[in-house]
Length: 409
Image (cartoon, rainbow, N blue to C red; front, side, top):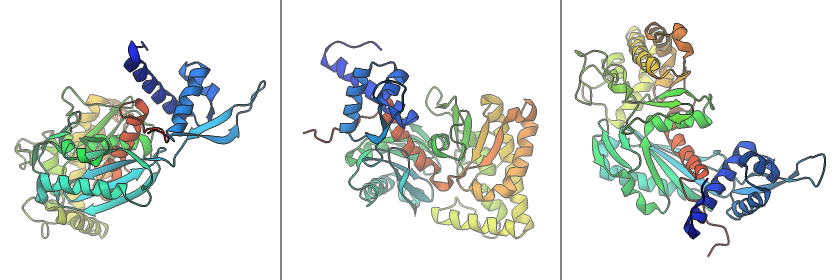
């Protein structure tokens, strides 16, 4: 790393090195200062100074244990201090807000799932409620007293992540809405991203298949999106809008989609489409309100479990369509794993068999290229968990400022 001239350059290098040491301790803890020096290539004096700084910021602590070595004085072992900071994550969707808080080791501190009709509320009222929900989470007894280092907000739509602007969220009815700017008054950094992207981040960091570097997370909401990880990094595309699996055209003569086109995967296998097909006597012909969705999902699953032929056939048709859409994606990006999330999860006993069959039939590589399709274990909290996990990652990588030392003025 080239050291810049002057105080600002030196401070920038030191802040970057603090992130390097913090990340190394996260990956290797419990570990000694000597082990950190060996892993980072920094000299021992520099590492000792950086560790002291991280301890003053209450991000690192000594464990009280010592490393055994053949010669010399044993080194005191280091670990992350999980008592001092919190990161928040929030997902806004058609029918709910989901909020979580995690500590520095990404252990959940608190979680809350609230019915909320974001489409009916509109963007301005939704932003007000989002800010209020984040404030409530920061004031929760499990979080109060910690430094909130940031929040990640997940939105189902096209999000310009650097600016925090929701460019287009048709299922919410939002267009060019500066959500990030509305949250500036919170007093901590706020990052806005697509819900599928953050769901994929959560799966990679804390899901049942954590550490799988090439995976796809598919949202199972009224909309369908895909968060794509390749080599452990999000595939964003030139404009940051990659992963709009739901708007892959399956049938040009098919039903109209919320995007204005016809025959999109979302219009044929999204939750709204499934419910209208599975529950023709209950599901309204209009777009589903937030209040409709969860109750109708429970009814559809209940009927399928009881052997209702209409419900079972509807879920199996949706699984086939989903598999056809996934086959196109698998042919393009070759993931090792696809995880179905959201409301798809309770439907998986009927969705998965035809989905896997259609995927295998549509993938050019033999045996579907080795790609598995499984249900997510994170439920409706996946995107919110990903928002919080993204904050912790940004802290480690230097993309967010570290908290000030405890004795700072």
